[in-house]
Image 1 (cartoon, rainbow, N blue to C red):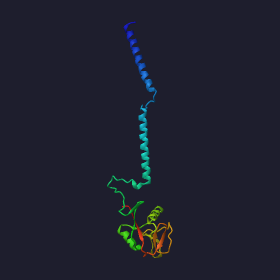
Image 2 (cartoon, one colour):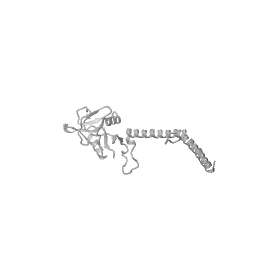
Image 3 (cartoon, helix red, strand yellow):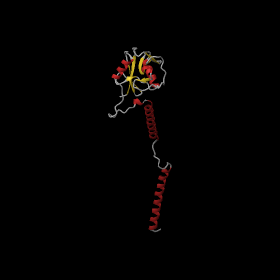
Image 4 (cartoon, one colour):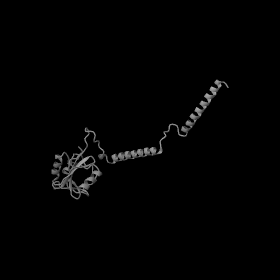
Length: 199
């Protein structure tokens, strides 16, 4: 065998050995899927736990924001101040309510509310009604519903009453307690409820 043949044979065998070695290494990677990342099991479990925790936290925040939108206001922007009510006023469904501790006639109660930028309470929904009855308790409270000279019932803000709830009695001014809404002589001295939108 001459030296050229020896070098070819030597080169072939070295290529063969390198190819086998390469093939052996290639075989090691073939056991795994192409494009997959090889991560030790504890790290993979940790990543799954973190992603699951973040997903649960995100869902909880979204559900909380849906169910309690008043708790999730944007505090970062000074251009959009947080809606609030003054001291002694209660916030409920985008309104502020004030329950008086003194008594007065319907007209004087309405005047007192006007001085605060409000009217006697306007009740827009069943939820508002339940809220007001719960806070009124057994005491009668003036609300902003009045029948002017036996005409139509109107709210103190000027809107017509659409009779979505029953009023008992034959007087011209309406009051509410924890059980119902009744009419009372407008000069009677009762507690009252004011309402106004969030500021």
